[in-house]
Length: 360
Image (cartoon, rainbow, N blue to C red; front, top):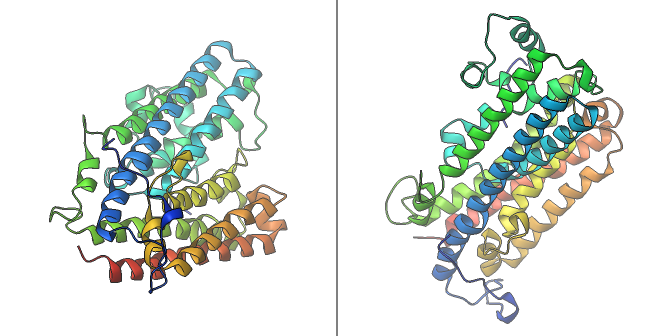
């Protein structure tokens, strides 16, 4: 997610159909404390861990597709590798809707997703035959922009997005294979950092409100969760979209070679909204939406309306974003404004609501 400067515990679902509105504009009658506990457990078991499990599985599929391509070197298998990259990218961008804990603390995010690619440095790296482009070398490159999604994107698509299999050199192929292996390792580390049999960050979330760091209170967890949902909206509206728009520089958009930037942005906002609603990757979780709906149905509606408007706006573009910043400027501005409206609601209204209503 970083732009480089150059630049289980099972939890019962809540049936809202049987709830009654209360006097303070709420939509639920269940014990608010019980609701808080369910939201926390469901976030861990129905959003965070399953999301990262899906991420790790998609990474393995991407790596497998690249291995097949390295053996056949056909255009058809290059296309399969590209589609696997896009599929992994979809899950990654949606998981950025909850950049909470190890993915940020351990720098997994910048290691995977720094841009723009410094094509000059990348080309020099490939041209230097004294550098062994094995997994260890690639993993330990100091420049985050030289590993992860975007160097792989550059190798597979080329600067004009039209690269054919025959144009990929042996050194590029070695680099691509190491890049994808490193991606698998990083995604595996992200997943392992949450699960009980490994890093068990999940337990830190489940222990929210017991006086322990990083969430000594439940309020702290909920505020942090709402904030990271807002943060990715800010990253999209005020960074990923705005920076290249203001500069008029197509190659500084997030995924310019594959023309995947608009899907990237949309998946970020869809992921954030799914975290709020408890619908991440088709799950049915009790979520922040339930907490807000319980005492302020009008605010909950505002949040839903804002996210739906922002998500729908991405479908108005007729060009990839690297071209839209030059030829569809009004659409760019409209979408940026809608995304930022969702951010404002999360980081101001929802955070204020959580601080006022969650005391434990």
